Image (tube, rainbow, N blue to C red; front, side, top):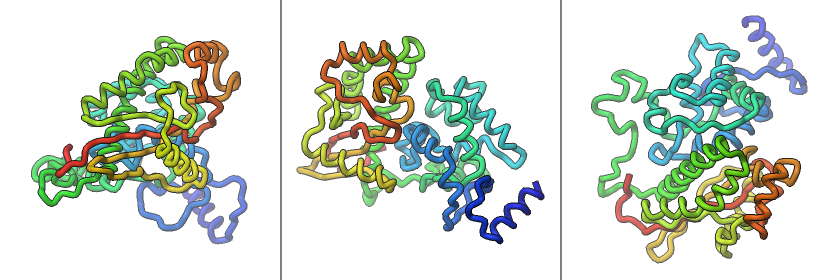
Length: 341
C-alpha cells in the first residue's frame, strides 16, 4: 500500500498525465476543488449516473427521495477496514439478490423497502463499485447534516428530530415547487418501476410491454388523484398516442436534450401560470430501458418487437441509446400558500 502511495506521488510530481494505466485515488467525501481527470474518465462514473441516479438521485431533497443517495450507500458499506474487493462483492451480492439479509442499511429498508431486482451485468456493478470506492461522489446538500444527526452523538434522537429539514409549518417557510414536483415524479416512477420490475421477473420483457399497455397510464392517473395533481409522462416519440407532448412540452424536451448532449447540470423547469404550478423534468434512458426502447434486434428481442407491433402499431419510442431523453415528466398542481410534507 505504501509503495502504491509513493508511486502515485511520484507520478503526480513528474506530471505523467499521459500514463495509460492510472490508479483511482480514494478521496472519500472530502471537498476537492481540483478536477480529477482519471475520476471523470472512469467508466463507473457514467454508469452510476445513468443506471443508479434514476432512483438514487443526489438532486432529490430529503423529503422527495425514493431511495438513499449513493453517498449514503458508500458510507454504510465502507469503513477503514473494507477492501475494494469486499465492497465490490457486497454490491454484486446486493444487486443480484436484493434482500433484508444482504443489506447493511436497515433504516433505508424501513423507509423505502427492498429494491426490486434488476438484471444488471456483473461487469457493470463492479465498475460502479470501483468508482464509488475510489472517488468522491456527489452528495445532496442536506446529507451532511442528516448523516451527522443520524450517526453522531445521540444517533439523531433528542432535540434535532428534523435532521436538518426546514420547518414547513413556519409562516416564513419558502415553498420549493421544484422539490414538490420532483417528489411527485420520483414517487410515481418508484411505483411504476417496482411493478415493471416484478412483471419482468415473472413474465419477461413481453409481459412488461403488456403491463405498460394496460396499467401504466391507469397507475399514473391513480397517483395523480392521491396527490391532487396532474401527472403525465410525455414524449416527442410516444409509444402510446396519449403520451404525445404538446407544443410547450416539446420545447422543454428539446431544452433537456441540449443539456444532456452538452453534459450540463440538469434541474427541473418550474413555471407559474394563473396560480397553477407546471413542473417539467427529463426521463432518461438506461440499459434496462433498451429492452423495450432500444434498437430492433440489437436490443429488442424478436418476441418483444412482435408484441410492440401488435399493441402499438404506431410506435415511435424505439432506437434509443443509453442516457438519452426519452420524454419528460409534465406535472401540474395548485399553487400553495404553505408547503406540505
